[in-house]
Image (cartoon, rainbow, N blue to C red; front, side, top):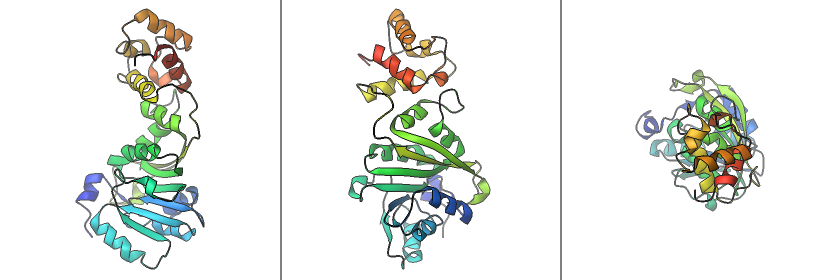
Length: 264
């Protein structure tokens, strides 16, 4: 089977460590009567352990060669349902709800796929995902920790995020040049902060991190042309103007937005 083409383009590395696959399956919530969605099953290393739990597994595979391989490999498993589909364009509202997601995500499209799943969070019970380790830390980081940024705030707003465990390059074929990690995201029923306009709120958050070495005051000056009002808003939110965004909590960002959100 070819190891190039679309799979190489997407940055996909195939999980080959059966112990890691079993560990992901155990963390995913897979069980009898549960619907699991596996994105990019590849050669089925995780698919088998998911099926062994008794779960119904809906696998989304884009690559034609892998699609045919999986169709043959799991032909006798009645609870295996294979769809030739692009996870970034797939209509998740066509699936039985709620469903859990388990996946070794292709590195290059991991974040867009996670955002797509978050768009459908009302239908998603949980997501147990393997990504590049650096991305995993960004997705689960809290204020003041390494990797904390606008993506951390976005994910934390929508989901309970937990870093589960590291996965070494030796667990894959071909072997990647970077470490990987497994995280678990559970969509929240309601966000931890209330904002009138989510799009405007995340615009403020994103702008705060544009230049990571700059202070919050200097970054947000791009959005607000009234320095005095900005200083008052920062003070009301309990944020020193000399702080950098990496040290500001989601609650504090919401406080700044509440004071300055009009017109964003």
